[in-house]
Length: 323
Image (cartoon, rainbow, N blue to C red; front, side, top):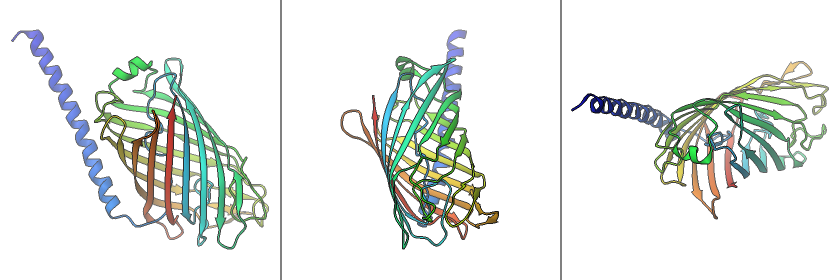
């Protein structure tokens, strides 16, 4: 065997070893996730969902409609609960996103508009539009700007981006209601969406990926809260993770986890003792629908929480329409 052939063989061996190590790591995490799912007990949780921030080619755009049904003690405001309350939330959420190129990096701005209603036992219903969300992601590592042709041939590995999101206080709100669809406060979220993927490309029918998103959410004050003069809110730290695997090119499943800590409110300077702390787990499944659209179903519940943590259940149906 000549020297060039030996080098090719060694390079192939190293690539094969790298792929086996990556699949091994993902497999170990998969066993841990599914073990936690089996031990889970019902309660409420919600995350952004699997593959929401996956790398996309330049020019790709999609509209997603989410139908969200929640029952428990969590309000529509991210990271907020009302201990002891029985809250019913039904929301239809529209999300538009488009990927563009800036300085050789993929940038995906998005706009989110929720509409629906929230009801709490014995309290007035709040309905209408929810808080508008404006944000975007930018690729930092292992996530270059790619044309559609380049994207088809791109071999995924480790990638990381930067997420920024602004929650605007545009939703239905009344200071005469203890639970509202809108939050009446500004919030800012910063996150680092990361992925470790194993496959020939992102369109590989056997693609397996682990997505992790740590984030921090900062809150402004509510200057007109229910039965008070001012409500402040602590920083919320969260980490969501999704272990996904393709069963075919357009069918995939995901084991989902979410950890949240913080978000305690204080009313007129006095703590409300309602901070978040809990681990949540769930499952998602994606199925092809009409033409190129996809239906994604997600159910989640909590496996561990503090005494005043979130409680209830959460189900989401998403229709994703790329164009």
